[in-house]
Length: 377
Image (cartoon, rainbow, N blue to C red; front, top):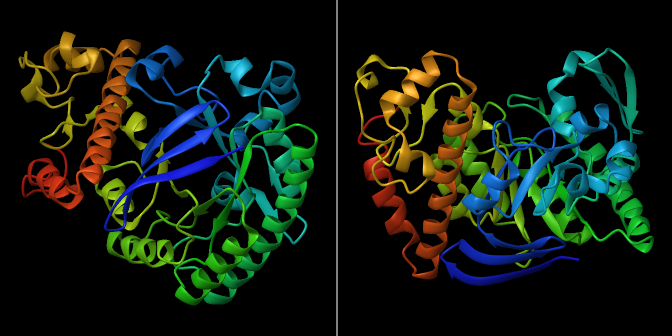
């Protein structure tokens, strides 16, 4: 169902190949987020043209609307959306975490109130597996309890206890699904908040579960970047080397390079497309805010070195005009550019690992990208 091959190591950075039911994915890989089985403002054809082989969809949102049964009857997410690459679906655990005022967690599962119509629902780890099986997800995630930065030790310990129990229950139901013909894969999730003893305990349990892959959860939840990197490197070192490693919710070059350096293989985030729709565009010299007055008569492309169709055809002045005019086309073009930029960056990262030049490429990238400054230009 899943074959992961490490093709090259450059210190802890790994260059690999991940074989999934809907094709081979080259790692390390960034996965665009398609919350509702679509990446906002970007067609499946555009994603395929850029070169993506896997995207993420959101179990919480799709469970509520249009529902797992309807998606199953359409041939799963692939038949429903016509995206023929791989789908990774999250468990909905983070969305439930963010709805703290509308949910209640106990050992059995989580009760929550829909943000759409106020209806009440109860999800168990078994039901989350069943829902993602109906989606025919190529990779599905276990239901977990996510805790925020600053959570007290006892609360983090209890959340880990529940997450661990839910992982075992999810594995049992996933194995049953496999016996009935489901070919997708289940990943477990390391939790433990920002307590190293809990992280170590969780990593050891995840290794014992021996599921196809392991995600590192509970990061990028409001902590300072240095804390994120410390816990990322600490946790990754505890994980089995032969399994793919996935960090959820990171989508800026700074966080991606750190994850690759730590030995992470997969990551996703809504940030590149969300920022695009709000006028923030990636360039090799750092992100620019297209809404700035200085781009009114700038007839050069967003990024002279970018090979995307947007940069080949349109100027910064035109993009600014579209943004200021609130044209739908702006969101489409800006999102395509940002995703292409990250995809090209990942290709360069993979090549640098193959050539044992990852750290050199990282230094060269940020010597331009940051330019000695932080923030948008």
